Length: 83
Image 1 (cartoon, rainbow, N blue to C red):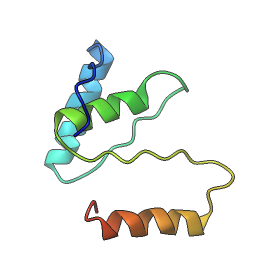
Image 2 (tube, one colour; image 1 turned 135 degrees about the vertical axis):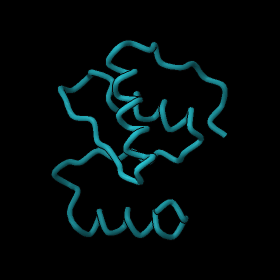
Image 3 (tube, rainbow, N blue to C red; image 1 turned 90 degrees about the horizontal axis):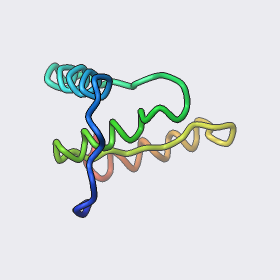
Image 4 (spheres, rainbow, N blue to C red; image 1 turned 30 degrees about the vertical axis):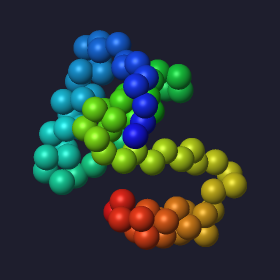
């Protein structure tokens, strides 16, 4: 249960992201919004996942993220049934 917190303001761009991502999910595909930092990509995806009652796992890539760390993340996703 994610709680009863607020939703994002729906703009033309968030609406387009929602439509594109839900279409991709209906075809059993995924999506990864790209763009400049601070534009709300992560929050948009998290809000969409919340409204669809789907698990959303977010991790930030950096210099400390090597293949072993990615392997641990993927292993955990498989073990909990999220993949």
